Image (cartoon, rainbow, N blue to C red; front, side, top):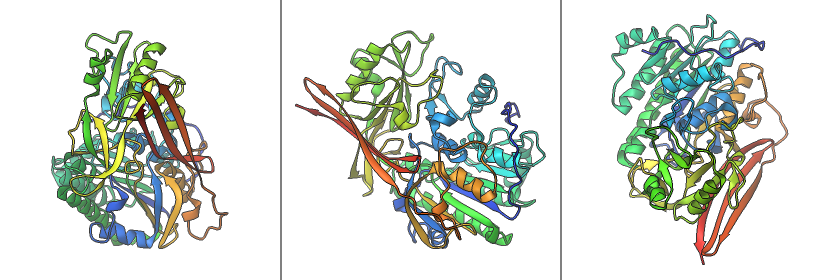
Length: 510
């Protein structure tokens, strides 16, 4: 079991108690694409949409990956501000030899020790609700749960709980759960059902918390093993819908639908791998020293690759600008690079700030981030959205984290007493907007401004001036004797909140 070893944030701001008559439940369908929502496959989700607001133009943050978006969803700020910029990163202070999975207990513990409790740099929704004196419950079938609330209760007697992939905080909660439901299962679908039952039948037994999250591992896990549209993946979507239906039934049984706002959201979209790229081999064959492990410690001139499926982070040991430029120019002349971001300005790239990955301080910030190329052709099941991806999964399997529109658009439905009924919201919105909207519903003041916006246009009985979205496309190019590299990034704005719609790049030989 996981011990309670995580240090606490320095807190201190006063918090009003949340509205006692309001509850918020967030159900995350990991990896759910909007085009798979229909009356046949997802009747519970379909009916929920009829009861509330469908956000038609919803976005993850980039990279379109689980840990990044889980953190953005509960903090309301961009990765550059919350500190989680990818699922897999190189942090030499945490592990000098390997890239780390950012959500593992060891990485989180070490990160908090090194940062005086600010591994995640800002408070999460759960922390803010608990500081206001109310209870929260986090129940996730995947390991992401530790990033959503890694130290429940914060010294307060709220009886809050975080459950994640077979572990719990406080640790003493887990034996009581396994006594009722048995051990955490190995099957993906059974893990989702176990986690849902733990939430509705055990963690809600003594009353509905002010804030709950149920994070389902599906359809993400099955789509990775098969592909979007595969029969097994469609079955996983139907299973997720059954779990959503069970949550709604549990609320009905408690006569709580009239006081509960339900968010059904996914963390990112999904694509099919057209080519699996062995980038380490390609770079080493081209004369670079590319590594996925430093056996005897990093040496100047070596490049650590942190693969994230549809994107790769490159860490140049010593930050040699000539080597970094040579790496960028090699990628620009390849047949797999899509969009390239760099820490330092370079011809034909965008800065890390355009991807909201420009961490303050500069330590262990990637020198280069590359999203792989994508196209809109169809896979073996007739589903559009093909990408190149790193070597960790084979061609014809599913993955994500590119700037493809199929990865960068996801679902969100919000229904309940605080939302308009039976409407669609065509304004750009994103996972970044979930936290400020929930805190507005609960009546909890923000300790500091968030990157996301409150989705006022979707809130019932509220007259607000219509927001005016803006869309722009930025471009960059680099000219070589053999041809020209061009890349573009389409960005939507609502006020000061920005959403990345899609990005693409290609080398055109002369």
